[in-house]
Each structure stands twice: as structure tokens, then as C-alpha cells.
Image (tube, rainbow, N blue to C red; front, side, top):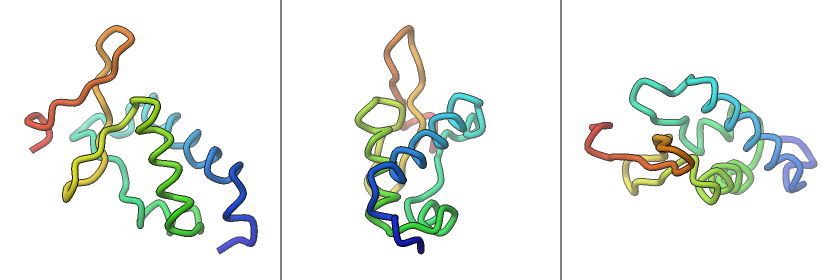
Length: 89
């Protein structure tokens, strides 16, 4: 793990990369984004850094968290992002 993993810019860089992946349609299938632990390994950062990156996207309304199931891309309706958990089962 890098020495600068607690740097807020690292969190924003990961959030930005995920945002681009979401907007490109990479997660269009079931809408599930990689787990925090997967992101932690992929970006070689601490768990909290990866979690904060995903939380940033949740705060923006791009993803929704479903306890025990993970994070899913919200569907876009006009300017509002929503997610129907019944569609991702």
C-alpha cells in the first residue's frame, strides 16, 4: 500500500475512476460495482480509502448500498439516479 493512501486526492482519484467506469456502462449488467475489498486490492489502498471513494459516489447518488449485497449503480431517470433492488436479484 502506498504511503499517501490517506491523502484525500487518492480517494477522489478512485471515485473519479469508478465514476468514469459507471458512465461508460461497464457495470450495465447487474449494476453491481466491485466490493470495497476488491477496490482496496485493485488500487492498493487501505480499506477506509476505498470505502470513502465508494461513499463519495453514494453521496452523489451514483450508487446505492444494500447491506449484505453490496453497492449497485443507480439507474438514471432525468437528472435523478435511482436503483430498483428487485431488478438486480
